[in-house]
Length: 274
Image: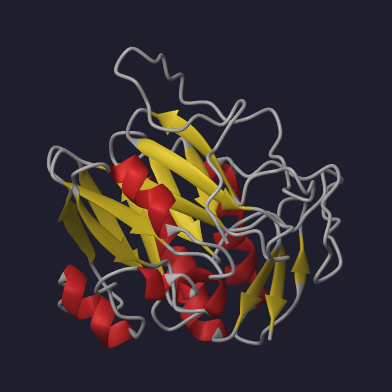
């Protein structure tokens, strides 16, 4: 399938004169219109691109993140692989060295890996080795893109290799499938509780967060109401961005729940043990 260029309010390559206000679209086109692009690009600022794979290409509609430094560009996740991605990413990243990594190794986040050269591995061991974790899942490691330092934290529970990325410049916390407006599938309850507590402690310990950005939207704008699994359309979606208080809330409710997995329904997420 030929790659479609991004048009309309979703800009392509940023110009030096563009005025970015660190805002989000008033709504995300869920991509169900046949004329919509395969990927929708929104520049949060001139070095931070939020990319959504259209729902019409796959019901997951995952969000990908491209972070540009002076020397390297980090693409976090490659989507489901149902549509070409590399031409778009190469256009947006320019001449920078491209690093392909993942929030975690599930298929809807690594499906496009085959288009790229040497993506970071998907196992916890491979992720720990690449980023330099000495005691996975403990500790915080830095990843320098050149004039832009990111902090990476291991947060297993949804997946053994799950990673969160904090951007000091924008104060965005990229949380993958561990926190987003939707069903938070928990495969390892003790690990998830520990990871969420560790992530909340990182924020409380002098790392201010403007917004938490996850990898999906599965809730409507009615508090606590989700779409059916596999829904091809998402009318009246919840916003992608979550206030950092939602992370605090998640940490509190899973701590209070105790050691036995339990489903927890809240306005901005549903904890969903598997």
